Image (tube, rainbow, N blue to C red; front, side, top):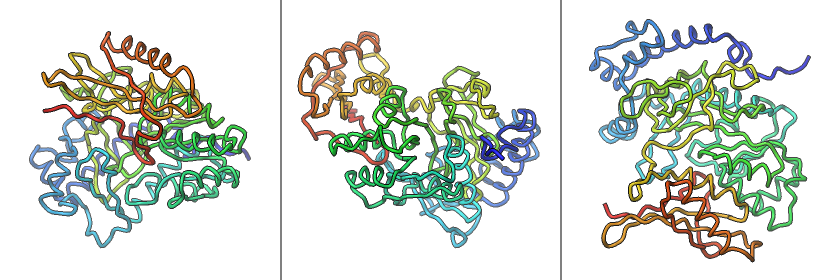
Length: 441
């Protein structure tokens, strides 16, 4: 009998009406659980005068107060290390993880129970199976197995699927690309930035990734723009899928299926994803950009209900894709951050938009966005470009072209472009930090 395209056909292919009924039941149960077991949530909901009994329809989720990183950080600081958010004693936990700290802020700390961890790997299985990972695959994880949650859940999902797993926690980039080719790996998992770095290293070693066994590249950890995805598929000769998760959630909440609809399906039997106006907190419609607010049903140790993520997304209907899944789609994945917009001389500049332009040119190996202000406090912005060493000629002309593209796409704003020496810009294995903002406050 042929294998199903869905990891969980009962819920991935059920009607929208059945899916909404399931979400409502889970929401009421999870709010009741949080109020009973978590002192933080009990205090939060009692202060707002709401309870699980007030949830009659899914629209009633708007009665619940928001949770955000600032509140989480405060309770961690007031009662270190975890605050009073937990629903069970820490002795019942089997896993400890924390955020990567790429923003320079104090990391958030999370604990998981055995049941939580089964759910975490289950959500990853939706995504990996949906993109075509099967028991016959060999899956290579190009990330360090540290306290950042990263691809941990994906590792265990592959074992659940029955695929052969190759971890590479202590390997150099050079050794990783050699093993990918030698072990006839079919699926590689990495951040988009590090996947580019692996491809560049393979070129330096004379290894043919396009002719290798790799046919699936699954990226996560940072938003992947269209130009970057196109570049990855060209360099690897493989299909590239986007996934996105959060340490606060513990797993992924969206994934790109093998139909590659230009976005990622939401795992709606395990999450409620609201898209709201960042200023008013009111819902926005299909096709409108807003802030995603997530409610997670699976992690019992730390309830996550109406958590403001600061991620910018645009939701489109599920039938935009022909795969038949009932999960709506975030077109283009995560589009950016509410708090990541740069205001340069009256013009809005998003780092994602700059990356979209720079990655159109395969000659660029790495880049950095440098923002500062002059003695008169006039904002300036420079994009530093590091070329692939094989690109010897025509660098000045290419920088002129990129500068023109940047100006044309930013309302005529002058964005400086300069060449960085070979190896001068930082390389990243986890989340990339390409924005250097040195403006005086």
